[in-house]
Length: 253
Image (cartoon, rainbow, N blue to C red; front, side, top):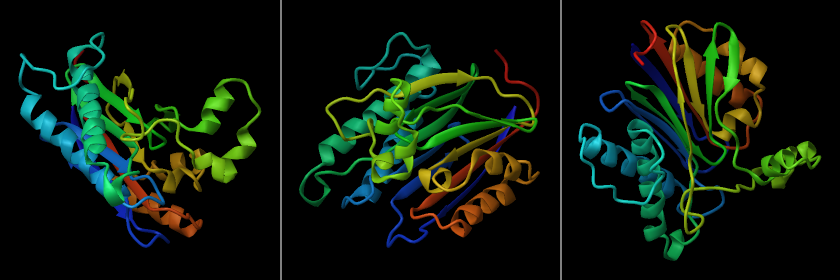
């Protein structure tokens, strides 16, 4: 199985781009992050998170005897635990850097890591990971937002998504003493597409339209079309999109 990826990130109507993204096929790591809007240092937080994750995986991805730098979920299988630890370490680094103008900085993260077990999906916040397979789009992540928490609790809150409350995160890297990432393993098939994106896309483009655009055979063109769609629909935020195409047979179990 081989992964091919394409990335596009645009500032949109904002003054600066607080999103960040990395595509590191040699580490099997693909991720996007959205710095907390409105706070000085949002861009610093998103870049620091991804740089920390890459540094950790680069040092440990081939080490079978890891000294874990942060307390994590020991119940996870080794490949998943590695991504979980990378996210927790990124959280810790942001916490350590929160001072002065950066005292309120934080970020979301949505990541995919390739492993012999499949694709490890991990996220914190409202940046999302989708899987497109044979015309059907599945969202693999659950938004960590106040509105989503209320909906999950049975409170009629869907209308709040279009209000300022819709942007309030219930989890973010750097925002609290500790953080828990949602981690899962997904088994890819040849022809699948995975989409990692910030809410500058999903806030204005429907999932039905996202599915249509992911049909585009070329991943680079698909990424461009998704970003252009968000800009054309008047997104109020930075827009970052990464499209990953799966080539070859199903991953080995």
